[in-house]
Amino acid sequence: MNILIFQSFSILVKFIEFVILIRVILSWIPLDRNNLIVKIIYALSEPLLYPIRQMLKKSPLGDGMMLDFSPIILMFILIFLQRILAAFLLY
Image (cartoon, rainbow, N blue to C red; front, side, top):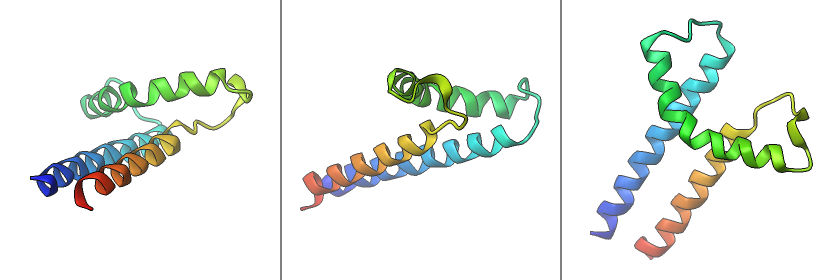
């Protein structure tokens, strides 16, 4: 049962990582934001990225950052959660 929970969480993490990666790539390409696929990617990723952006705005770095580091921070958080879950469920 523990392995099933961990594998399910791992699949969810991989899906989120894939969506975030697609979103980062889409941000570099000038596309129409009204495209259905673009809307779906943004709808799936924005609820995860928005709180991180808000915390970054309140940090000493403030709003003056030229790059959006929220996808990188989200990836680190997901990896961290995955390792914690593995430690509790698999060992």
